[in-house]
Image 1 (cartoon, rainbow, N blue to C red):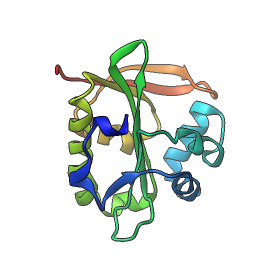
Image 2: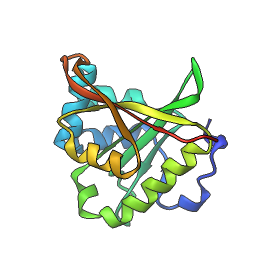
Image 3: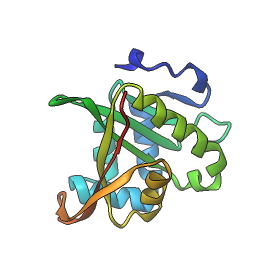
Image 4: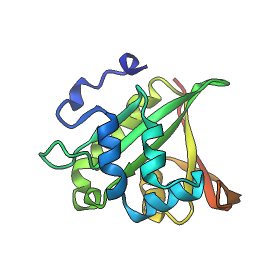
Length: 164
């Protein structure tokens, strides 16, 4: 999976995630991201986030340090080979540096679309900043699901479609 997409232009900014990265980031996540993980999975981020580790999980540091502030990734959908589930979680530091993350996040979504026609997932309806970011990236909110996840809370089903 990892070698399918060339990330060389993002070296020094984007790198493969490690278990240590996810453990480090979990307690520092934005409250909205913590709430979303809990609402969806029923588990706190410290338990749930390490399960996100895969060859397609990446971390970003928005500052010059190597401290992971953002974790993002995708997972292929076995029943739909042209689709991938995409996700991103971050610490509050992200919003101090939007000019750094915004263009890179758009470029990464473009890169993923070179390999997958459909990018999709679900977002907690309370996570308004995340929804705004998804819409800025070109995602559409397909529908609102009133009872979703472990806590039966409102979520949006979102997607982006681009023909290859």
